[in-house]
Picture 1 (cartoon, rainbow, N blue to C red):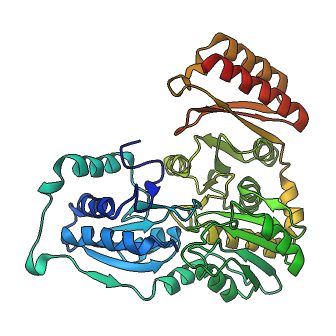
Picture 2 (picture 1 turned 45 degrees about the horizontal axis):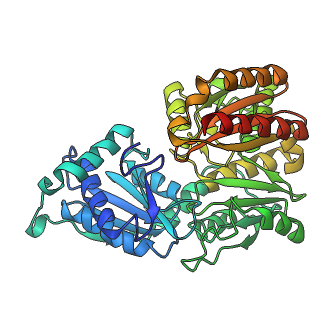
Length: 449
């Protein structure tokens, strides 16, 4: 990736790495790139999660937007997928989200959506970076009545909730739902949407104070929700992350239902209804082998991409698919939204429960989750791709692949940001997997240190 943009926008420690100065430059350059070919007064909508640094970064970002003559519309605190939806509903030229998703409160981020609600292509991000680095001072500086203005949209939450309630044709009466809002951006929209669908609702971690986002809660810390579901006798628990683009579930017994299982449940139901485009689900290389076996049994093709929702979406758009996602709960229902949408995912899952009359514990049996063991091998940064050419490592990988053929798999993947090679082995015997993964990781460390 580039100097500023990573795999999901620009991220960093707020006020240290992601400074107001950088936010201003991003707003100015980003607004110029995304609106320069539009033949009208440009409009950019801006949303954010609950982090305390959001106000600071929003002010700087909007100043940058207005400085090139565009109108900045503040949506306030709202989930990331709401911006992807509302940029189309409001006929905006672009959308920007200030959020670091599931990261801790000290971090923040800025990510862009184009006027169709999709995250930016690499070449547009590179163009923004190039302007920031090489021609920032040459950007237009309108004066007088041509300077951009800031406005506030008071209906964003209601408009997004209205969209969410439209993605199902049933009511959720009789279903007890427990939700964990991660003290994040879903704290208003999730309760409003699910209550509007007549669910009996129990909520935790829906009182953000600016500093408690993702703090031992939400989809990355789901343990408390598992206990809460059993405590209140809920039929399902739903855990969102800080910006609301992910959702993991908990069945009535307090057991986790991850993104792979949610895709299996929803994908199979859609196929039975003749609504799964191409009878295909797009997943990633980290998805559980159980998802692949489910697909083989049910006649659903499982396509695998590199890790990252952008790669999942690229493949979906390329092939015309409508369901894809990651084990982490970042799931895209392309018939409804252009990015992962945690609340939309939750509604699709509950809809299957309602229409089939089955408990979540029964629905999840469609897929057997095979044990996965992940061990990190610490290596020299410049050698983290050398496992591909080292004969001893290649030989050991081939032995393990032969050993687990048909009943498991071996996946070796260098980290994109750290001097680490990740060794993941999947199969049926967890103790055996741990022994083999540790042995291979030790060999990689020894030879690539």
